[in-house]
Image (cartoon, rainbow, N blue to C red; front, side, top):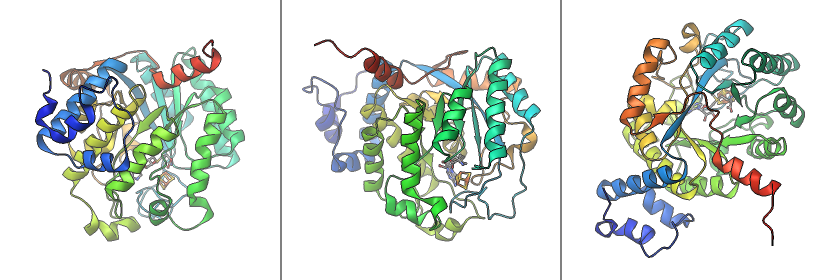
Length: 381
Ligand code: SAM
Ligand code: SF4
């Protein structure tokens, strides 16, 4: 079906057929207005984003088996349920065997790649253990399994060590690109510095990772201008992959005290979908994840995101006995989707969103591979 953009004034203005090329850059004002669009205008935005996605990255969905290796964290982010000071959480760390078993599960079920995620630690024992695990996972999968890390802020040396041991993608959310808002959602100390987090994204690029970042949507104190700036930030730093989703409250965190400032969860979900659709228009060939937090609000939140711009899903394959302890926010889906019998259900719901799973593929960001190809062979003049 062809959307008649003339019916929708805001979208007609931005995606007018007169534009010979799809518009990819937007002013803050334009983004704010698009982030607030509703009804048929929102439908037209989603339709356009779906079209741009299919034309640029196709309708394939890449799977990353998510292994939540530990909820032990040295940091105290004011929004996070596994923050260091939350004494009500029982702490766990998966054994090497459990991590290797989960990675094996991903490999034999043709997931293509995994993500090792956890609370932040930078002690030597921890960083060395990750290096060892990376070597073991590579060896046990004959190098076939792609590995993404999401283990927070580290030194250049550690990032390099992990890169050399086999990790090739890294997720480090900036959380908010507004340093003032960042300050309001983190403790005021050197361990929670916006500049350090921003600098880490540069270090990761220096080590030649495919880099993913992202933000939380619907944070207390956050404005639509902040979100518009977040979208421009992602474009300005030329990011390869993005994982962004709704902020969700957790009763054992300091931010819970200001929950009266929040949009409803449904509004946060809608805003997240509009953010994903707009980002797809702005960065047509990056990888965008349909995050678990979307699913926490709506059982089909991830499928909705896949329809309108996302192309990556991260099924949780953490051993089920530990899943409930990795509670970043309330009502985190404690699904069994990694389990064999529910893979079929996931496949069906992805099919219903008009997409197909790309089994056994690393699913690297086309944006990353294209940029690297251009750097390796600069255009002849
Ligand atoms: N510790 C690492 C880090 O912070 O980069 C990786 C794990 S951390 C749990 C992964 C992401 O969870 C964070 O970047 C943050 O955006 C998200 N998160 C934490 N608490 C959240 C909440 N209450 N609502 C939504 N997302 C949350
Ligand atoms: Fe730790 Fe990451 Fe949670 Fe911050 S968001 S408290 S670094 S696990």
